[in-house]
Length: 159
Image (cartoon, rainbow, N blue to C red):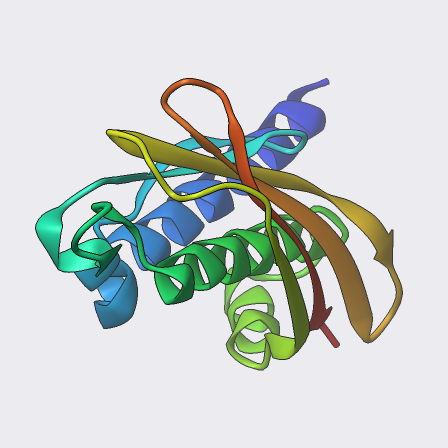
C-alpha cells in the first residue's frame, strides 16, 4: 500500500511540474495568460481570460482564431503529456523529462463553431488513442456561458 501511495505522489509531482511548465516556463503560454485549472489523470482543463491583446475582430471584440487554435493545441499537448506520464510511472523523473522534451504537434485540426465571445474560456479534452509513438487527442473550447466555441483534434508525437 505504501508503494502505491509513493507512486501517486510521484505522479502528482509530475503533474505539478507539467502545470508549472505550461503556466510559467513556456513564454507563449504566458503571453496567452494560460492557467491550468485542473490537472489529474482523468481531467485536464486550461483557462484563458479575454483581454484586448487577444481580440481578432476589434469591431465584434471576439477572440482571435489563432488564439483559439493555440489554446486547443497546448491543451492537447498537455493531455498527451499526462497520458505519457501515466504510462511511465516506473521510470525516473529525468527519463520522463527527456521523453516530454521530444513531444510535439504533428497535426492539428480546428473547427470554429461560434464567435469567440466571452469573459473567459475553458479548454479540455480526452485521448482518443495513444500508441508507442503517437497520441490522438480531441479538444473543446467553451466560453463562460458554457457555449462550445471550437473543437479540435490533435496528433502528438509522444515517443
